[in-house]
Image 1: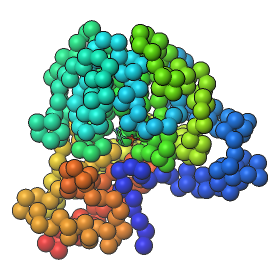
Image 2: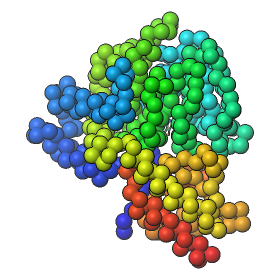
Image 3: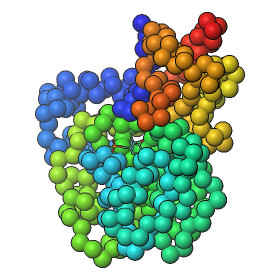
Image 4: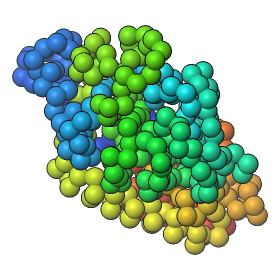
Length: 355
Ligand SMILES: *Cc1c(COP(=O)(O)O)cnc(C)c1O
């Protein structure tokens, strides 16, 4: 049976990415060696990381004074690396979920943190709108897509200070203005690569401004200077990331994926709103196009497990909601074809007809 992969992360990758990674595991760049056993210092791998940086810059239209890094440690390490490198006195944070809360916790180790607004009061089902960012903050940090709750900021906020953004789960799904940001980071396992690599995009002028000493491995300048090769980088996930970037470029770039992603999300939200059994959990104006969260309507709450089993029997994988919120979540990352969304909608209709 054909499987439809709705996992939230690690998550679906393009067939192109998987095939070319598999090929390179057997024979990497005609070296006669596996990608798993080549030196990261080889000229063949240097070409991989160079192209991955160049394509990231091209696809996101980054100005020349932005560096692209591929590091280990996950987005979670960035929660501390960002304030370590950028927070001198005070930073502003928007609290829109578990990941933002974790970022705030780390920032507090380094200075004053002004949480300008939070949607915790209603279980993070919306994005706060009216808040004031202090003009004396070193930066304003937010999470563009809240993977667990299915809310998303689809427009760059206005901020009087430079912005830092955790774009783990929606990078490459919308066109944004990079000049508003001094740093963007994310785990690559949502929309780019298998797990194991973290992307960081940092503006040159953001670095070297804090007075504290920074451990070598946690100092962005180390990785900028050494081109992400200060130590051994995650070779295989970086190779896969390059394959995905090539696939993005061949398929029309970020603008085209934004169109496809918005179309896919509209198909699923339309069904959630139409179907008598289901309802969405996120405030309508803040609905994520990457992670669609929904539940059974109260009258049908007892059908939750039955629906999950039914969907699983039809080849749907990973539609269970995050363990902290329950219900259902369908992640519609760039690599997910529209056919998979249509298949899920067909399953929801069929289940409705049975009840
Ligand atoms: C998955 C996720 C993270 C955590 O990433 P790790 O690489 O596992 O540390 C952080 N922020 C967001 C928005 C995420 O979706």
